[in-house]
Length: 398
Image (tube, rainbow, N blue to C red; front, side, top):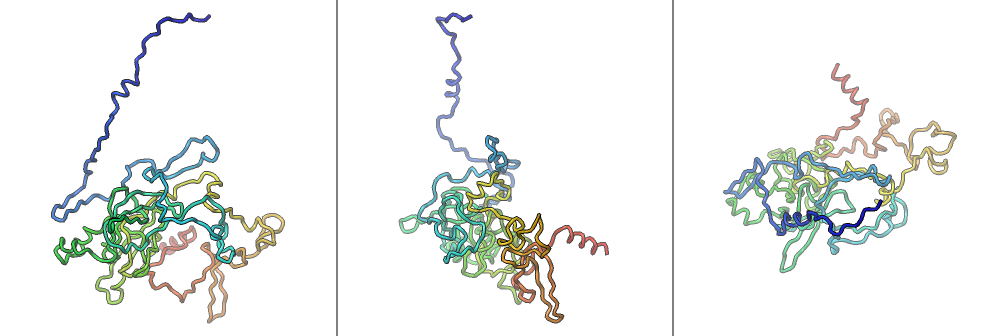
């Protein structure tokens, strides 16, 4: 039975009124308190902070999504809410065009397989030299579709105009910070402030900050660095991808032969000898959780310009040496590439005239044992598999 309409409805409490009154209608800037372990040296104007990540402890590092579609069920992305949401600085970009998009060289021949198509993008011009001196302001942190590390847009006032440049951002850098490059030398004003002839410790206390570019001989031992150069006046070539870094091990002071080199330990475990005037940036390359991501579906791989990789066993005999046949068989032959090259390590003993073929997972070896890289002090550990571990245990037991 229908209820009769009421002439007067009961008064309701307006919760929105209380919400409007409780809101803060004016901006307020709240300065964060100093964390524990912060020390301030007023004589040198230095503020030392403990080595902690800028992100909160026990915070989520990956963002998952509610599986409304199958392609989102397994999607995981690093949380980077501090990235700039707009377009890049267009004068420092150029369009990505040409045959190289499909893995081809200038003659049209495919030199890199499994490349093609992908989303439309613009290439960012990154300053890997950083030879111009002066302090620069970090305008914003951006995503670069051409690399897995983030980039920072720097601004510098010069002659009434503002100059901009892109660099690979270190982990923890945010907009508003200031960075400087000391590759062209130490400023005269800084030398006067430090007394004219400062020692290495005082100089590092004023220069070795996150994001600053220094020559390797100015970096104190034990410091994590990235964007490392290999030539004296050349650009940065090592440790440029996301989450990579190296550690300065020794400066070889007083060594009769290697006093012009600095020993640097890479993330792979290799210790490399680099010229002391090569460039290096303090910190760790940003986006350290990039390796934890999951694309969720094959389509995102195609958006990145990566095409599928087909096994040689699944091809026809005309397409691959392992193709053809009945069933899953490659014809009782050694593993070879699509061009028929042995996927193994071939060592030739000229004295005994014996051809030794040893299978390796790392591919076809081209460097001979006589052609040793003299800049490698300690090679990276290899063959750390189950067999190698068993062999180590047997040697230890003996």
